[in-house]
Image (tube, rainbow, N blue to C red; front, side):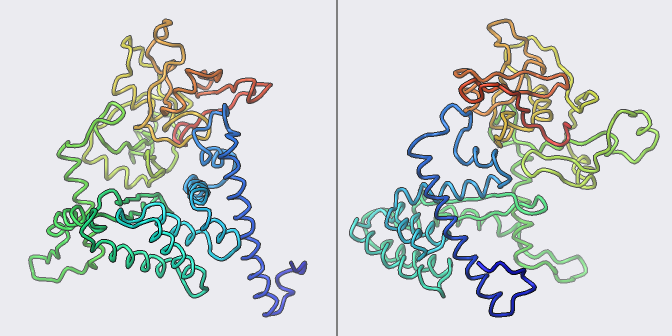
Length: 412
């Protein structure tokens, strides 16, 4: 690598170092994948409290959980596909195309023989190794292979195989959610049919043409489909309550009346509200949603933590679960990102041992960390600020230094 500053390099030097950095980046990525594979084989995270390697990597670095999951997923795939792994480690293919080829070889059409899969693997790796090839070219080759085998009479045609369905909804920049999917023909037709009338152009009464693009109309139709499903109340119970959007906001933020603000001298104005799935949203949007909603009033202390409810029942009530979602934001175990709807309400002092079902004795934990607290030496308590504090076993930390639990910004 050139030791000179970037401004000291001429045009050829700049281009040369960029290409060198691309090569080094791939070598580092290859090394990381090899190390993660070794972590898999040795199970070195046993007893550390992490549900998976991706959670450990996320909790130990500033990498987003999605990036960690992609990296760990690639390592797992290349463990199963050593031929693709060798091509990746040699630098013949990059991570994205290696993932494409390995995923196809692990989930080929049902009527492909092993010899056919081996042949397809070689063809796809040859294509993916070309400098001019991109992911779209590899995906197109995969589709051609799937179409060829989908014509056979034995097995489910690829286009109608629901076991190959994929759907992704991931949080992106600014809290927006990116949706991507690949559905079989029947469910794809069902979706398009439902969207058809909801995404049709809607001219104004005076005949003015709908100015929305087709993509925007389909997006509006999909959002309307979600609203109608939500309003119909057809969704299953999750976390003890029907599916709903939970918006947490300061009372001062939600009003413009100075008289009401003066009644809440100890309440902080954060300038934003918070949702379970996508994080912060603007106060204007929170106020819009508050025009047509059910409001659950939860009294917070000076630390922004819900006060105890003092219930005597064994299981947490719906209002208590909502209060726990405000306080913990999801699984409270350090480094875990499981949302509140997928968590259990764990008694810190077990109910059978006389522990009450109130907020100072309850904490949200995902299934994995709920089992961890019951079957290992990990301990948790509610600290003086009424936030969760975890204590690892001596096998993890001989000094058992306290670790603060997860907490959303609105509870700080």
